[in-house]
Amino acid sequence: MKIPCQRSIFGFFLVWLASLSFASAYNARPKLIVIIVIDQFRGDYLERYRDLFEEGGFRLFLDHGANFTDCDYNYANTRTAPGHATLLTGAYSDGHGIIANEWWDSQKKRMVTSVQDDETKLVGVNSGAPGSSPHNLLADTLGDELKLATQGKSRVFAIALKDRAAVLSAGMSGDGAYWLDRRTGMWITSTYYRSELPKWVQDFNDSKRREKYNLQPKDPHDNIARATTPAPRPQADFEELAGSTAFANDYTFEFARELMTNEKLGGGQATDLLVIGLSANDILGHKAGPDSPQVESMSVATDRQLASFFDFLKQQVGLANVWLALSADHGIAPLPEVAAKFRIPAANLSPAQIRSQLNELLSEKLSPGKSTEYAKALDYPIAWLDSQAFAALKISEEDAERDVGEAMLHTGLRAYYTRAQLARGDIPNNETGLKYLHSYSPRSGWYVMGVPPPFTVGTAQGTDHVSPYRYDTHVPLAFYGIPFQPGAYRTHAEPVDLAATFASLLGIIAPSHAIGRVLTEALTAPQQEHKHATEGSR
Ligand SMILES: [Zn+2]
Image 1 (cartoon, rainbow, N blue to C red):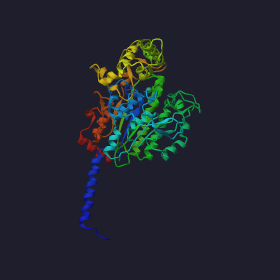
Image 2: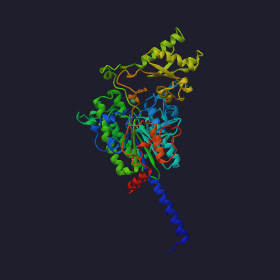
Image 3: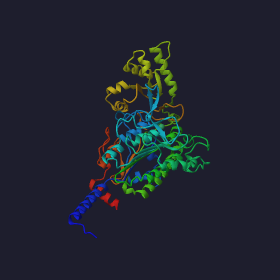
Image 4: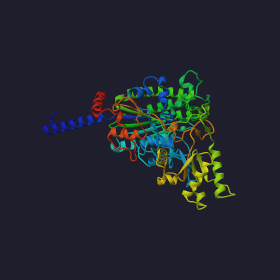
């Protein structure tokens, strides 16, 4: 055996020393960050159902984590796509560009979704529909910054039933975004990410696991089953069958576990990121309303599902190596009939009726005797305009949007902000003005944002969200992990603070347009953080 010379022993010693210092720096960072975004999980649910929660689910945040009880979105367009984009970019729509779930595209002369991308195709399903990508994002995300900071060593994934929730959370550089084909219940992706499904996703889809979610007769005392509404119909599409039930979240967590195992998340050299969107709570909440026994039951079921997923994380990577965050993309208005029961003025409105009323008023004013569709779509309270119809009359954007806004006042809306006005930053210097400034995006064509009376919703049945009011803006924001000092924090917080806080803790650059603050009041002192990390890594 050859004895190594003194110099190479010294070299080895240096390498060993370097690896030691890397390990100790690494200890302050987790192996994995998991962000759970529950669609429509309003900020008050954590308190309202606290006594029904058991150990290990929401209580991991409530009893052992840092819980920001007063977190609100500071914008008016409280929808799913903007919400997810906001959480991960740490910016509002004026930064990330996602203004709504869908908008009118005047070039294509149709509504387009926030993630639909004609340059891509769906992968995993035979469909003529275009695929999805984050091509409309104007800002990068926490995951993108992790990728840049580690030169690609961090892996970033996002999953949800809804494509917009998965795609916008995964950012531009995400390794994968998976969502559900509504009809078949298969997990799919798009050519933006890869040309074929990985084998483990194919196997998951082939294993026909969705079949067990073709609902069985329900025990009304079973919390999970109680949250379900549809009767068993094996032929119905998956979303119709299970989309509004706790089974859909089971299915999402089942897929998350499979993803963690197969992609070995938390097992690499750098911090990985997984964003899990739970869409079923929103689908149910629209029908049943926030004060219903169904939503209570669903929240209890979500609690148990979280507990079992966190147990899995414990076994896979150890909770000392994970940072967790919990939030929601928006809240929800009470069912108008429930609000009305307490003499609070409330109403279900029909967007189709409001739109035709708007078009009648505008036709009378602008083209008497000729009815024209000036408002192409109305996603109450936002009107998407046909710029070409106005251009044919040589009406400028400024004038067109003002005309629509004035007509809106005759249909019951309280006030309005035009795209042109928001683009100029011409808003009243008050809290409401700021909310609308944050809602602006240059991404879509002409539009007018109406200000709805509170407790009015733009759906003929059930309830909705997309207002600047607290029932729509209030969401949970809670953290668990070594850097966080457990407690309830009643200081002002916004969902944009999530990305800023994680970026600071990771020692990386915050996303390009991030405006949130670092939630310093909930952070342990750095020495303590290091001590905990060292203990945690043993
Ligand atoms: Zn919704």
